[in-house]
Image: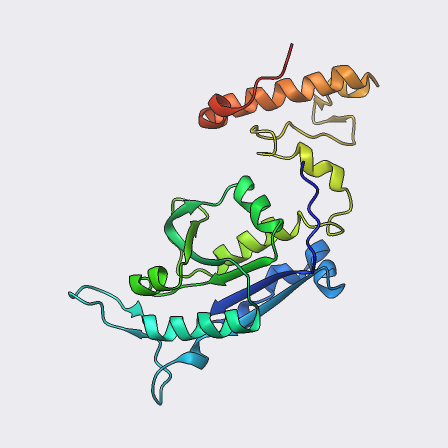
Length: 240
């Protein structure tokens, strides 16, 4: 796996109507420890600060009619410009169900960079003109729709931050995880040796590292074929 060595702490800046949701789960466990140590940084910028009028409005009715409301281009444009002025060079991403799928390859690409500027939308979506005018990259975490982009932003941030040096206790294990070799991960076992009549496979207790590695590879290939044939078709063949 590529050794990721960012020149400065990786930065996540989230534009959101609900900054109080952050850090949320990102502040817990190893990611939270890394945040406290300054291995990465997080800022939630309130979109309402850029709202229009006395009520700080951020949305309006959709042009052409239809249900719901759409987030305004002028509000979002001002927020993005302010964030970029404070932290230049961050790739700007809009979390959207119509975006490209968030994959481990994309996560690694983002983790290798300076960080990410993430726009968490709400309502029916955002004005198309701000996507085009500010060069936003649309990214989706899956084929479903959420009430807003905050949870999706957290997913992207966690996936990237855990790849940063010093965040996880066993960085060598990253190369064996699902998707790293184009395969889903093999099964894991630990004590007790026998649980409810289900023993640990003998090969894992053999002490034969070559046999264990071969078993794990075979299990990863089997699970990938059964559950994600699309991945199996693209996975590199291991030399005989």
